[in-house]
Length: 146
Image: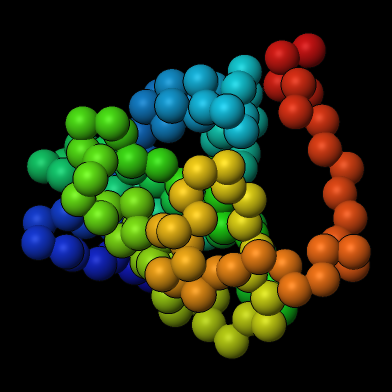
């Protein structure tokens, strides 16, 4: 079942047939977090996540997704709004649509990573780790460029 939310003419939709993969890839491959990612990997990541496209006049202008087990955990990522549409609260809107998605309720933990949007995500209840010593990572920021 398709889940859609309308906010004054802006539509957030999890319909995979509406995703403009070329536009999504064009943004992500130039982003600081997925620089160089291939179109094939973008398509695979969307298929394996709860993905919400953000639309204005049937054109995709933003995106967000959750990587999840649907039971206990989700990672909010790949959130963006095209520059011409920024400053209208649409990043918060599409992020909220993912966090409040009916298939993602009752999760024990949500996480995300951001360099510059802490204030946006704080409005959704995200905050710094209480004890970062318990979180570990393997991070290869140049993997898509090799």
